[in-house]
Image 1 (cartoon, rainbow, N blue to C red):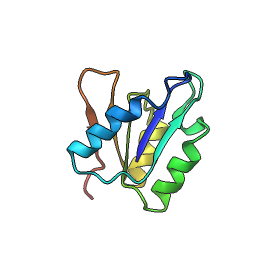
Image 2: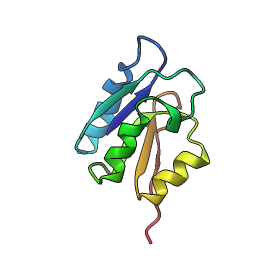
Image 3: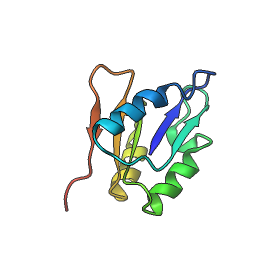
Image 4: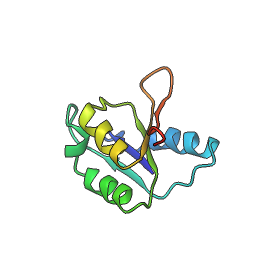
Length: 103
């Protein structure tokens, strides 16, 4: 799934680069969400995060392509518990992907 969170009218524009990133890897995009939470809002408290959680918990998506955010331990731990990945792209020079450890 694609997820972006920007508190301005520019929200959603980043999804274009997210879409390209996913397409370059032949990933299936199940849903695209553009959240408008204020800067500094923890990801898990953003208005559309419950939908992200629903898709991951139900197994409909394996991971989230998102803009670079402060992916704190709470978010990363939550995702890893569900064997989900994040691909954070955008504001950082190099794309980083966090994959769960095989186990």
